[in-house]
Image (cartoon, rainbow, N blue to C red):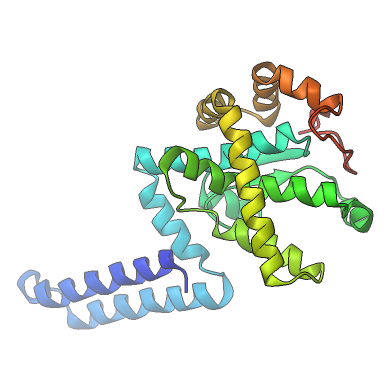
Length: 252
């Protein structure tokens, strides 16, 4: 069970306990209190069985979103993903910063980046699994966690990213040890890349907080990191082609 759902259940239980104690003073029916408690716990049980904790995430994220610190942390996390994807020429179609937005777009977690390969990418997937492809995507997956560590000294998000990387690695027949090594390598590489382009990361956070489009974010990165991108395109920083649309095509 996820921590967010556990916290939500704890809040429900605390509220019902207080209602039971104070109910007689304000003439609350014990049956009403019991009914509300049963309904609340039933909803969270359904959430765990069928919705993978989404309701708990929606509630806790909705409450947390009132905190400027929480909003900024989530934005830095997703900006880390987006900046790394753009710098490594990974196609991106969109992004979201909230659990509700992620749910609407079929993404797990409190936010997410939507890659832009198009509908026929799965048909080309076996040909895309090159070492260069895996290295660059591993860095993009770990870049959100790396951004939080760089800015705040720790990471509260990123569990879904780690699991996605591990699932891919297991699907390739690799061991958990190899997946852990790749995860640590990718996190270090992503953190190094973000540190080198910290100005671009901060500018991207400001733009994403205003819900700037992917095209606008991409153009911002192109202006801020022009020298790096020129070297990348020329193959001076390990550029290798990746199947799929070019992230700079403007088809976000």
